[in-house]
Length: 249
Image (cartoon, rainbow, N blue to C red):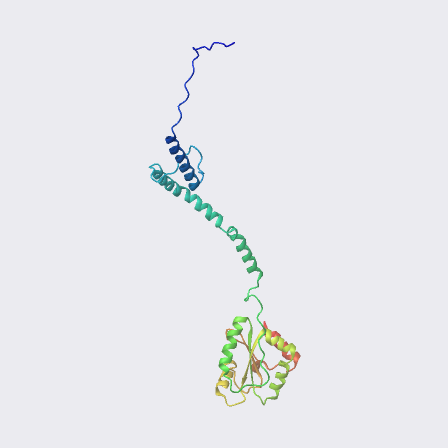
């Protein structure tokens, strides 16, 4: 049995179909957009942030602000840099100075150390030597090193002078001479008028001289003793050593 169809039901008209001519431009636009995205790559900038623009007026004022801020920050940065660059050893000049002072105090002074013993001339008398220069040099050295000058006037042919030379060569006597005296041997056995004048200068009493004539002179040139006046000591180790010790002080 057939039911009657309501004629009052409203039906919506079908959507109009898109014309084929309009579909092609939309497809082409999608393809072009995909090609641009593949060529430029994905954007790394967060969504919603503004892309930097060199032509933007807001970018230009920011440069002076950063420039004006940098001088204020630079002294602090330079100060911290200089502080960090300062060597740690610079904070200890006092330690270095105290160490240097300690080292200087530990080292003995050359002037305070005892002078080396003076060289003792060998036996005999050098007739060609300039006796005056030798005496002058001995006086200077004696003054600088705190010694006394001993002038030995004699001759190479004198037996007593040879006996005294043997005693001078003995270790004990040589030690006394080297530590306390500047010994100068002067030849008066020849024809040297200069040496004879030198003898009369330091032994002015004159007369006949018994050789050797031993004259002890202070560094200032003052005669302390003259064996031409007092007589020679015994020309033995005991006699000469006693004589030297007596006048060494």
